[in-house]
Image 1: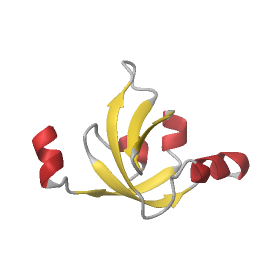
Image 2: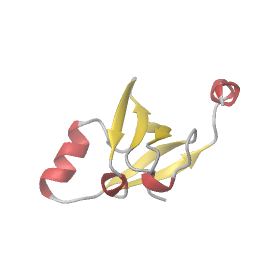
Image 3: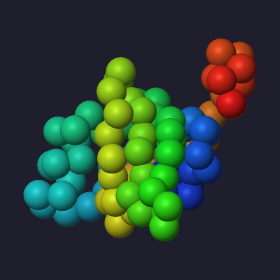
Length: 84
């Protein structure tokens, strides 16, 4: 599954970062590295871009960028379930 398919409020663990050249380097520099947990917080009215939470900060990505990131969905923790 890729990050662009993850529903709002759900979390996942990054398993692979795709892309080529400068795009891949930029994604890695922003902290999108394997074994990092990400949570989709919200999406723009038309669905693009999306806002994700990782490593204690919020990051906005275009769907084209999110399609390059492969994730494994995780079950929400008890604290995340209370907030939804």
